[in-house]
Length: 228
Image 1 (cartoon, helix red, strand yellow):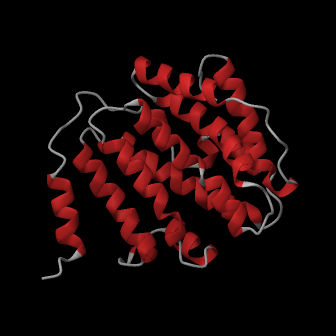
Image 2 (spheres, helix red, strand yellow):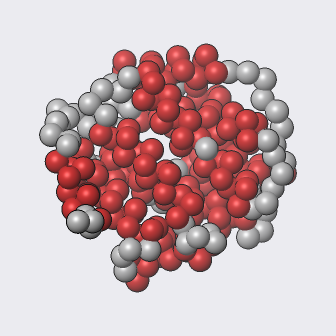
């Protein structure tokens, strides 16, 4: 018998019996308004025309997912919150009636936002890992950074994926390092970033918001991973 989505979700939650004594992310990661995230607000100011709506909705989604994880003391709670967003972007819930962000994403993306479900998967893997090993953290950074290439493809901006991934990796590492509660895990992020550093290539003008985030991220990381 084919299992329903709810049954599959319940089984997945049951496979996560552990809990954390302290949250992995600081409360600052739960700010879901770009006006409360100076780096994003500055970067979005460089968006060209209607591109801003696409950039803003995508980064706001990422912030909402971060909030779902940061505000959860147990992985199961975080999974339930992330599941709401997965349902919304997959079109299996009536969330568009209640969320202006979901409605915006579904209007701006040709597949109604299904293209961004990979972000939910990345945050879920991060939230439910019993231990943040080098491979898990590196994979999370890479997957989250790939939203830059997804944005470029959606906006039909010609750019090499490797180039935009490098730029986004700077910001993702800085953002993560600034909000991890564990000093050991923060040092791991700094180490991964240092190993991946290479000469950065310029991005097309329409991707200037990502170039700004890259510059802000590099500065923060070079100063030991302070808040951006």
